[in-house]
Amino acid sequence: MKWKMYQLFKAKINILKMYFMIVGVISSFATIVTSIFPDVSNYFIGYGIKSLLLFFGGLLICAIIFELNLLFQVIKFQVTKKIEMGISVGNILKKNSIIVIPVNEYFDVVVDDNIIAKESLHGQFITNFFGGNTEELKNRIKAKLDGKVGLLGNRNEKKYPLGTAIKLKEEGKTFFLIALSKFDENDKAYSSMEEYKKVLESLISYIHINSNAKKVCIPLIGAGQSGIELTEQGILENLIHMFKLRGEVTVSGGIEIVVYTGDACKINLARIRSIVNEQ
Image 1 (tube, rainbow, N blue to C red):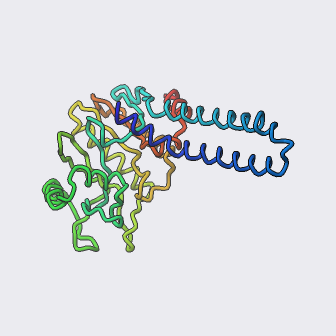
Image 2 (image 1 turned 120 degrees about the vertical axis):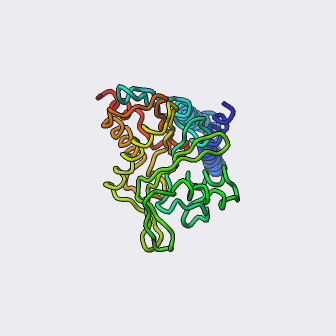
Image 3 (image 1 turned 90 degrees about the vertical axis):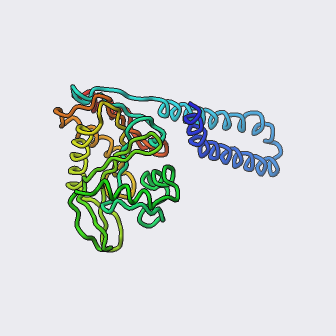
């Protein structure tokens, strides 16, 4: 709860900044006008300023209520007869369940803001759970990939087919790392829509086999630097749709799609409810 309140506080900073900026502009404007037209001073102070502040204050309250509702709300529904799905807002790395981490085809571990961005989920996973010990992480990933088919890439390192997944455990948490994106000659990440769908199919199958009756938390896969040409809303709807198509899959612990707090305003919950109700 403390962490959620902290996230809520951060989410309000920009709104408050905007509010006080508007108040400052209104106050400055009123000062200029009343200095030029002192006869209208009482009107601006007594009615105009108060009315404007009340108006923008109301907007501020509405925005805070909206974000508060979105932050704490968890939508739950049966995506199939065998899977209960939830949609929440927050930091997926704080979840006490299996966490899906999208990575690139090389399963890179160096967070340098070039290949792996510090602010990406992949980067935060490495930094928060392994810190500077990337060599250990590299060796553990290499051991997990042993036996999987890989090809020698442009860097003289092995790269693996998109959809390749491995399981790692660290600090009492379980992570499913899945190859989502590949690189062009300029080391720019990309994935086609066809490849993206195959990755999701592979992920769902991997979860079916390896979740062991535990809840699995999935981010908005493709919303980062993977080059997927979908909005956050489109990614969320696509995830729901892909699970709905896999009625044979069982995930006893359920699936929770976790929307990053900064992306919450990009999600239309009313549309999600309508999609869910169509089943």
